[in-house]
Length: 98
Picture 1 (spheres, rainbow, N blue to C red):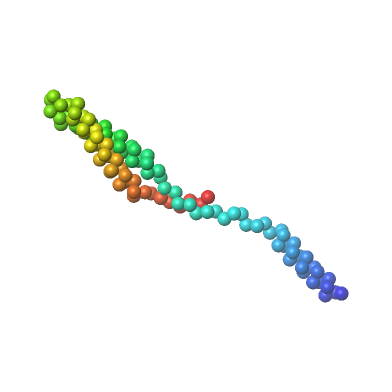
Picture 2: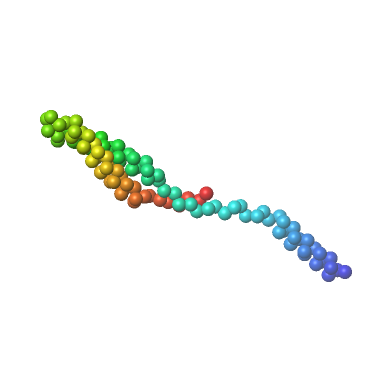
């Protein structure tokens, strides 16, 4: 009889300890976070177009300033976009726990 009481007490205490321990909170997930590449590429396009337009206007001959501005803006936009895109590939990524 005494052994049964001791066994019941031991099982009761271990059962309570399993119930009393809260389950661990959901484990934080490790997430890779990178900056948005499109914003940088778009910014490079705009800056390249402006710089190319100004340079094309200055370099073009006296009667062809409008054409020089348009061509310079187009070339500058393409060049600015490509430069910004290649720089954006070197992303600064880091891990965060969420």
